[in-house]
Length: 306
Length: 268
Image (cartoon, rainbow over all chains, first blue to last red):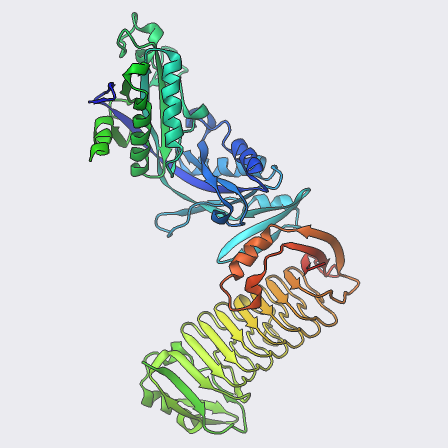
């Protein structure tokens, strides 16, 4: 399969069951909503080292937010519900409670079967030292915690759902700037897709990993098959002209969301075409043995035509 | 199907317990059975059809042409709509759980007493202890919304625990007395001893109140949570649905007890 001269590998991305939640952050203006959201989703690139993978999903206009202020929605994913709940509360306490004018609200509603309610501001209220005030509007409980800038307002809970993490694709190019340009192009397009985040810096990861290592203490190490500087001395996946590989990892709420994001991202990466050094699109997997989901690139990209 | 309508034949000399006349209790009854229902009137039990002309068939939509002699109208209402034309006696909507109760007239004391849910709309005045607790009980209204287009008597929301009471007119003395939580709004004037023994809860005021010494000024503030509150009121058939400005003067008290209650005074 070829798109704009870019070869699409007959391979698949392998993804995992995760737990996901959405939080709506509002503030006096977008600038402060972003300060809060950037702090909350900072150091959240990979569950391996950060506990959660998190990112900003999109901007929200005042008529989309509960308190009619500008805001952003963030998505947060973890391998299990316990770690997600712990990380959410920690990050709420350190990043939202502390941020001037910021407020936090539930971003996922639904019936009890599909959505589990988890604590958002339920325990943060104790920061109020007895001066906190609870208000119940439309069946939802909110907490008003007196702080030095006025009042910190938060909903008591948000929704947690079953989600998917680890969708991905690789961009193989003849130079590093070209690979990065294609990745940036892809991220710009994928940012418009709801229900997904690309958790790595700027949405792009350069240090794709394989399972295992020669060192006993490491359970993952550099993906040498895709390292361009090792082409001659390892069992490489790269053809001679490939000089740089960039990966985009996608976490999403449903399989369809990841498929859509992959489709849009790969299409955008291929827009630059072979003429600009973009040679191949591939994907990362573990032979299909570890993950519960497989996203076959050709299958997803053939949906464009249909 | 037309609304099941009860029209008083004559104003009874003694008060009538109307608690059996709710959509949930009439649901499976035929008109004949409803006519034969016994209602407590003073010290005797009377057939419903000796007191009322009963027409219609839709028990989910009950209409009562009432007088102040009818007590316990809409008591323990669980679903459906009751519309009352004329005045209502005491305990209107007592322990009401859900559904809608509309009164086109005035209510006597203890309306919305110990209510837990639903909407009680009084298109007229309410008596004392609106949203209060039964004598001896420790908690008043625990949920739901009460709208009063006219005035309310003394002790509005006495020992109120949750829910919302919105009064477009004036409220009598001891409004929000011993209040535990919830929201009371008074667009008109309030009388003496406002928030007496108030532990927690929010009082929305639109006129400067007369303050007890145990109510303390916390200054003027723009409170973001009010936007959420206004949003929750948007669909109510009340003047409160049009509130926009979230700039208020905040008074806190009653510091003789917990002191966590608040008066939010608009327009100051």
